[in-house]
Every structure is written in C-alpha cells, then in structure tokens.
Image (cartoon, rainbow, N blue to C red; front, side):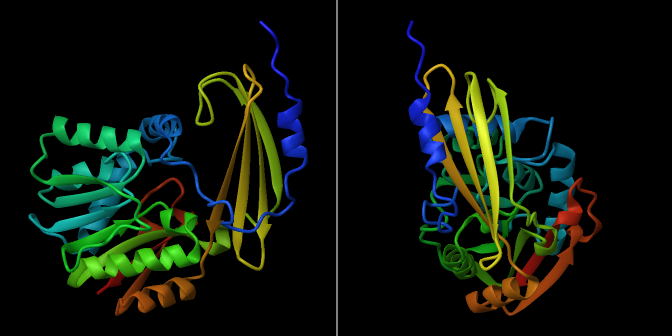
Length: 288
C-alpha cells in the first residue's frame, strides 16, 4: 500500500490567509454533515466533559431555573431553539410542557426523536429539521423560548438579529425568551495555536493530526478559530473556520429591543446556578 502524500495538505496550511474576513466562509461548524454530526452527538452525550452539552446534573438545574424565569406551567408551549439531541426538550416535557425543538444536525435529530419515543413524550415534543437562521417562524405560538450555550454567538450579527426577530414573532404577548451568551469580559482575546493527534474524537474516527489556531479581531470583538485536520491514512485535509462573536450587555439589550422585546433582565454567572463554568456566561431574559 502506497503511503499518502501530505505535501498538498501542508502547502494548503502554509498558504492559508493570515486573517480571513469574519463569517466570509460561513464561520460555523459543519453541523449538517452526517459524519461530523455523528461525532458531535458523541460529544453531546458523554459525561466526561460539558463542552458540547452540559452534564446531566447541570442540565437539570438549568431547566429548573429556566422553567421559573419563563413562568411556565404544564401545557404551556416552549420553543427550544437549536435543541441538539433533545436533552432539555424531553426533561421539559416530563414536567408537562409541550416543546417544539429545532435543529439541523442529522445525528442529533435522530437521537432526539428516539429519545422522545423511549421517554414516552411523543404527545408533547415535536422535533423540526430546520436552520433557525432561515426558518419561517410561526406567529404568536409559544409561551416561552430558549436559546442557550452561546449558540447565538456563532451566527453573524445580522443572522443573530434575524433569529431574535423570528423568536419575538413566534412568542405570545407577555411571553419570555432566555438567551445565554459568553460574558464579553471573559472572552479569550489572545492569539494562540495548538496541535494534537488522536484517532477517535470530534475531528475524526481514524488517526489524525489536528492543527488549530485562534485569532482575536479587536474591531469586530470576535475570535476566529481555524481547525485543520490531517487524516493520516489518506493525506486528506479538512478545514473548519469557526467565528465566535462576543457582545456587550448593552449591545444584546439593543438587539432585543430592536426585535421588539420590551424588557430585558440580566443575570451574570447564571444567577448562582452552580455550573462549572457559570462565571463565563451572562443570561438574558427578554419579555415580549
């Protein structure tokens, strides 16, 4: 068997643009690619870390907090924006809440629908395959909505505003939205590089070399991470560029007001909910 040539892969890395324009290449993870989605699902479900979905005990505590802040009651209808594998949606349903979850990762969608079946909440949970940036949001349908774990930040500012506008449209008058975003003061504003080898993690299921770099864009207040995965058995290379937009509290409030929300409450550090990384986040509760 001939050994793969890595020359092309290495030259592609060598000739990469120093500072690509933010979001020029999509700026997001390939959530809808089946193989990547399957590997990401594995990260969502592990209890070894909370980097994709938080560990189960923390999820339960978040759900209690969100339930109270949204003022939910049994039979209310909740919109779970970017619901992933349905870990939150099912627990809310077990409290009697009707839930519509949206996502477009094929493995996450399949798992969520299976979880709904096995937990016997099919009459309460509906999982929709859609990209929330382009979804046609229904009007005045939901009694509350949630968009957590910083998912708004991996969209461009224009996309984020469009999503907030859509969520506002979908809520009934007086209903609330919970959004979790990184505290801008806690963002990593240093340029850095890293590498490692592995054979079964997010970036591949066969031996690979991962080369990563992060650059901070002070004018746009965002970080851009580039991931180069060199697959050692084939010599092929994958490139993923991820933008992570940070927002000041005033900017988030302005965006929510622009969407139409009348009041925005601010809860730094998850309002004392004991999450391992609580200090890194700010939670916003916006009222229609």
